[in-house]
Image (cartoon, rainbow, N blue to C red; front, side):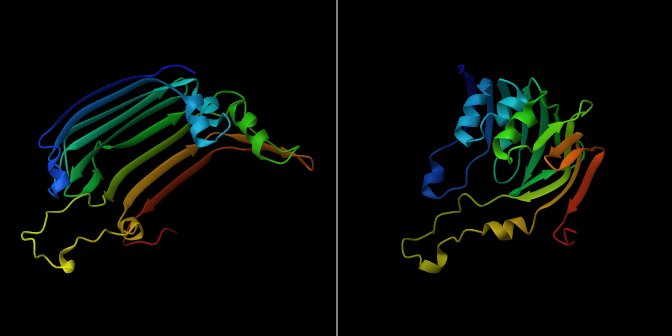
Length: 220
């Protein structure tokens, strides 16, 4: 493997106050990871070379937070590899992650030749092949008009030592948070070729997927 380089700069006001039940104060931070070994990520995830095959041997990641906290602020995320370009930005608004206007997530992945075929051989039955077409094109993904409630990380401590059990904060369930998620997703999939012992190669191309998830609308 190879050694990655990590650079972190952060400014946090009263960072330990959260241990006493106080809300986390706004954070300014920049995190850069350069040369992250994708083979190591595969080993950690047990994916037998999938990430290294799709992305290339290394990955660079950058995360920037400006005044980020429960009440507000902004975050930006980017990632780059031989095959991947990812850019995202969002605003924090009273415990909710929002992407409106120019904010959102844009991903373009041009899989490396042979990467899908090599991984498919390791997980599919013998004689079954799933590979990229010669003119596969990139996988693109866009997320916009996003609203995602964030789980509460801290609440104010009770004002007196005689607080009753009813004053103990309760965590919001993951299903309840999921029911409040709103987003629009657009994706274009690369052309793939499927074949097996009984089936001549079949090419699937021009697959466009668009979906809108909203608490007020069913997901179908």
